[in-house]
Image 1 (cartoon, chains in turn blue, yellow):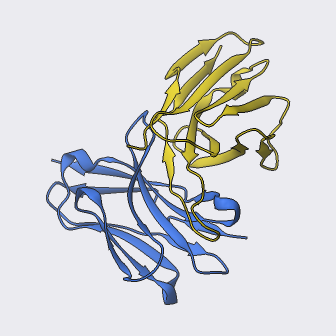
Image 2 (tube, chains in turn purple, orange; image 1 turned 180 degrees about the vertical axis):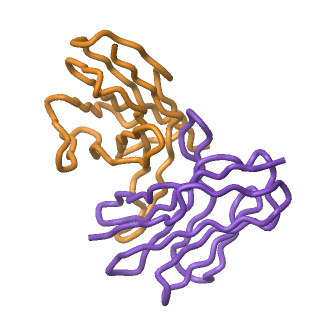
Length: 112
Length: 120
């Protein structure tokens, strides 16, 4: 069965510092992978997705993610965080039937 | 484009009553809608997959008689929590997906803003 693991439950970063959120997956086929962001009390917004091709994917709000098949990882990065980046981030994998399996989420706190 | 709305955004009800939550795709036709449940500080758990005009497919452990799902049109799916109890209090999120363009292709899911249900 497929699974997604986000090892870090929360991360605190200073505004302007770089951010990296880890995501590891387990899936028997070529994965379709996603990163979503959720602000408090809100739904999910898609940041970026990987289906195939270039393993470095650019997304919205200055985020990027790199797919590494050998490490079963799809880590999200941002070079310089803004206070508005404080939110919950979810990594997800598309499984059979177009269902999404989500990781546990990483809460990002941004210090001024 | 690709906007999904949910109504209400929050609801408070008494134990034993039923609550209906609507999920609408505003600018596209959604052949498939998904219902998720999210407990505080936890991830989203898929409850059921709803295809227009057919019965919903529930995930293991989800009571279909407790959580009634109707997908009567290509733009509307409803989730009814019947005889709600405090343990049903949660954040319910729907997502909608357009018709698959070709076999093996993937159409993105678009998420609604969520509905917070509090059962007293």
